[in-house]
Amino acid sequence: MRSVFFQHIRTLAAVVGLSAVAGFASAEPQHGIAMYGDPVLPPDFVSLPYATPDAPKGGSIRFGEPGGFDSLNPHIRKGRAPWGVRTHVFESLMGRSYDEPFSLYGLLAESIEVGENREWVQFTLRPEARFSDDSPVTVEDVLWSYETLGTVGHPRYHTAWNKVATSEAVDDRTVRFTFNTVDAELPLLMGMRPILQKAQYEGVDFAESTLEIVPIGSAPYVIADFEPNRYVILKRNPDYWGKDLPFMSGQANLDEIRYDFFGDGDVVFEAFKAGEITSYRETNAAKWEAQYDFPAVRSGDIVQSLIPHQRPSGIEGFVMNTRRDVFADWRVRDAMLHAFNFEFINQTLNGGVQPRITSYFSNSVLGMQEGPAEGRVAELLEPFAESLLPGALEGYTLPVSDGSARNRGNMRRALGLLEEAGYTVENGVMIGPDGQPMRFEILLQQGATATGQIMDLFADALKQMGITPQITTVDSAQFQERTTNYDFDMAYYRRGLSLSPGNEQLLYWGSDGVDQPGTRNWMGVSNPAIEAMINEMLNASDQDDFRAAVRALDRVLTSGRYVIPIWHNPVSRLAHVKELKFPERLPMYGDWPGFQPDVWWYEE
Image 1 (cartoon, rainbow, N blue to C red):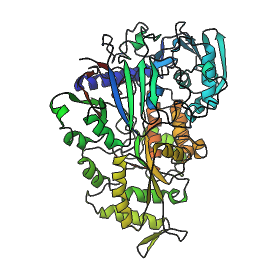
Image 2 (image 1 turned 90 degrees about the horizontal axis):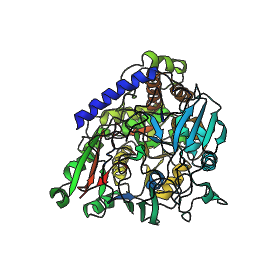
Image 3 (image 1 turned 180 degrees about the vertical axis):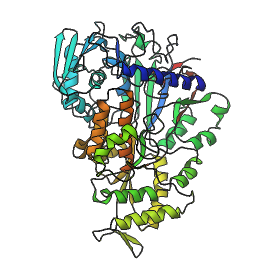
C-alpha cells in the first residue's frame, strides 16, 4: 500500500506543476477551486478519492484527550472548547480534499465564481442546505458569520476579513465578497469559514466563553451530551441534509464520536489499554515498539496501523519569547539551542529513532534546502541581507552533539555565545548584562508527561552553565490564558504546517502579533523579511515562485532561532480496535483532519 501511495504523490506533484502554468480559473460558476489551475476532480466526481462510498454506517469511536474544556464555542479566543466540536458540528461553504495541496469543492455552496484576477469571489448556496434543527442555511447566516468571526471571533479569522472591502447578498442564495488587496488565496479562505446560525446568537455576546449555548451547526454531527472536563458525545444526525452529496460520500460513517478527558497523557494510554477508549495516536516511536505488547494487541483485538504522509514537519519544541529581555538577543537563543542536547534526549526518550525537525517546512518539497541560498530564493532574500541573522543566506543547520550526556563541544559554544551577549559566570552562577542572575520560566501544560521529561533533561544541562530555570506546570485553561497573552519566557509550542501555506502565516509570524493577544506569534517576531516572503508567497504566479518564497521564509524563520525543535513523525502511528477500518487509498496528507474519524468506519 505504501509504494502505491508514494507513486500517487509523485504523479500528483507533476499534475500540480503543470496546472500551475494554466493560471486561475475563468470567471464563471465552478464546482471547485484550486490555488493554481483547476481542481483535480471533475464536476461529476462521485466521492473524494480516499473515501469509501460503500462503507457501512454505524458504530462508534472513542478518543481520549489530556486536559479539559470550559467552553463549547471553538470560534473565539476565550475558553477552551473540545477540538471535535469545531470539526464535526460546523461546515463551511466549500470542503477541502486532502489529496491535493490546496483544492476546495462545493459543500454548503453548490458553486463558486471568481473575478478574472480573483479580486472578488461569489458563492451560491445549495437550496437544500439545512442546520441540524432543520432551519435553512441562508445568505444572512453567511454574511453574519463572516463579519462576526472576522471582528469579534478568534484572531485566526481576522487577517482575511481585513482584506474584504465589501460583502453583499447578490440574491437570496448568492453572496459576494470583494477584496481590497491583491491576494490569490482569499477566495479559497472565504470558502473555508464555519457557517453559524445567526438566530442562535441574537442578544448574546459572541466573544464570551460559555457552556450554556449548545451550538447548532449544519455538519453531520450534533452535540448529544457533555460534562465539562469529562466528556463530549457527538451523534450522527440521521436527517443530515448533505448525506447524499458526492463530497460526503464515504464520510461521516460512525454513529457516535466520543471524547473523554483525562488528567494527563499517561492516563490516556492506560485508559486505551483498559479498553475505555478505542483509538490512540502514539507519538513516541520507541514506545510504539516496546509498550504495545499488552493482551489486546497480542490477541489481535487492537491493531497497530502506520499512516505515511508528505506534509511538512511543522515546528514543535520550546519557543523563546523575544518580548522578554532574556531572549531578545539571538545569541542567547542560539546558546539555548546548543545547550539542548537533542541527540542524548532523543536516545533517552525515543531510542534515538525519531528524526529531528530541521526547519519549519522540513520533510516536504517546501523545506529550505541545504547550503547557501541559490537562484530565486537568494534573489528574494538579498534585499534584506543586512538584517538577516547568520545562516539565512549562507546556510544554517541545527547544532549536533556527540550523543553523550556531557555534550562538551556544544556546551563550550553555548558559553561562548552567552559571553558574546554580555553574560559571565560568577561563583557558578550565570550573571546577565544587568548584573543579575540569569533567570527564566519554562511554561508547561499539566499532563504533558513527555515534555516534562524533556525539560528535566534540558534543565540539568542548563544547571551546568549556572542557569536554574523555573519549570512551571499549569492546567490547560491556565496554559491557554497565559500563552494567549504571551505571559511566559519559554513554553512548549507546536504549529502544524501544510503543503499550501497562505494567509495564516501572517497570524503565525506577522508583526501584528507582537502586541495583539491570541495570535500564533508566540515568539514575538517582527521581521520585514518574513512579511515580504509571505507577501511573495501569496502573490506567486506559479508553483516555482511559490516554493521559492516558502523556502526563503523557512530560512528566515529557522535561522531566527526562535524555537528549540524536537522531533517529528514522518508516519503516524494509530492503534485502534480491529472493528475500526480505514480506506486502503490514503490521502497525500495522510493522517490529517478529514482522515480519522471522517472516512473511517466500524465493521464487526
